[in-house]
Image 1 (tube, helix red, strand yellow):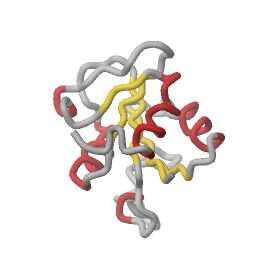
Image 2: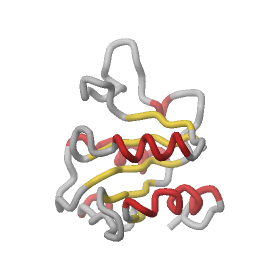
Image 3: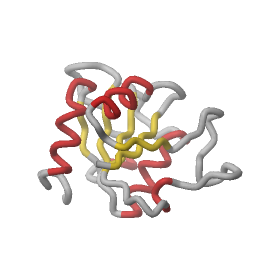
Length: 128
């Protein structure tokens, strides 16, 4: 599965990226090492525009109520018809929904990352 990862705050997704790779998933990120969106970075491009289709976008976020600029990849994914999983940075506590993503994404806790991938693989959460 090709998973695109974005995050609310720089560095919040590091653990999720490592876990997804350990699960055997192909992982791309919305931002390069310098924190710039890949779509506007010189010499790169948005993974959503790549020839390898993205199956799931994972947006790693704490409990801030508002969508941050670093999470715009989740909005891009929704526009592209790609499922979005909001994954919290904390085990046993689901990520909160910013108003912009309500009814457009699913919420998981940090320890449910594998479940988010399984839901998409098995079509359990592919549509609303």
